[in-house]
Length: 503
Image (cartoon, rainbow, N blue to C red; front, side):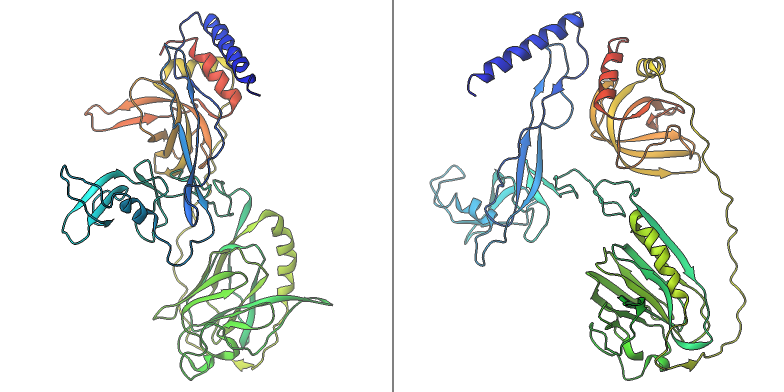
């Protein structure tokens, strides 16, 4: 194994020579990164810490330095530290105990000082004195402040994205996928408007296992409720028990039928109500059901809301406790695509009249004029974009653009006459002026061509657009411009294009 390293270096040198000859000794653009190395051990022996990996930049003397970071840090989570363990920052300050500082022979005992501006400097207070001293950066993996989730890395306070990489900014989509584009799940969004002839619990919808970002809201003196869905020998069925809510019992002494404000009832798969069971009123708060936390909000007026992040670990049944004609129950949740078909089939079973433990007549109320509805805008589908594939199109935009770079789309905001993309620059092939790590790219119209999807990486060719008065300086992605999903093949095409036109 030891003899393989010189052989590898010889092959790399030969590759450099061949590339230099093929380019005529006039290489342009940034250098090439080597593949990432392996992750290091965690910086901490317990609790939270960081792990690091690195890569090297290989470039010709004529080439620019590689764009991007040479080091990447990710969060590592070990078992919690035992009670009484000395915090990491305290250990670092204690290393200077008894050592002369400040250019004198005086020594001090040092403890962390958290009131300094830079949280990632090792600021230590001299015990028994009123001054502190900064000993430079804290070690990587030190919490930015006591109890904080963010960690110090290379002198900066960073938070971990959903991918575990510190400072990546990666977020989960509505489907629970890190960096996803909401394409692996579907949004179920409806309004239940059926009105029962008598008071009691009425079925609204099934909330299947795996549902996320659940929201239910209604404005009336009726009461929301959610019950566990159980499958018996003859098919799905609803168990209506008389169990109390597990979140804190009854608020007040009256039953729900005598209350003058809306409530919510929640039940688990074993038939127990979590909220407002047995016609009793539960207090607003957070309740546990189906493996998630359900937030029950009851406003001062006739309004209540149920919120749950999910995913649910079992099916739930949403109900409404009717006391007056139903003005509408609004509900929505995100569901994995593979569960949508079974959900549709099961939801059809909710059409039966529910069994009522205590049938009561619905309290009449005077008719109200229907609320004015805003006119529904006519659909405005975006027309298909023109076909811009091909070598000629690529060369035209590469040579005519001010910037060519690889970027990850962080967000998209559509406005009346233009679309704004926030992007993170990953690799620059061509730039006629400096670029920041994060930039805004503008495209004309609310249907830009080609469209860019958030949380995906592209190879973009953009132009610089400066307003006549100099107040606006933008990166413009022209209509039918050059925007390709980034791939190693697209990277090679861009590098070939760079040899056909000057910077």
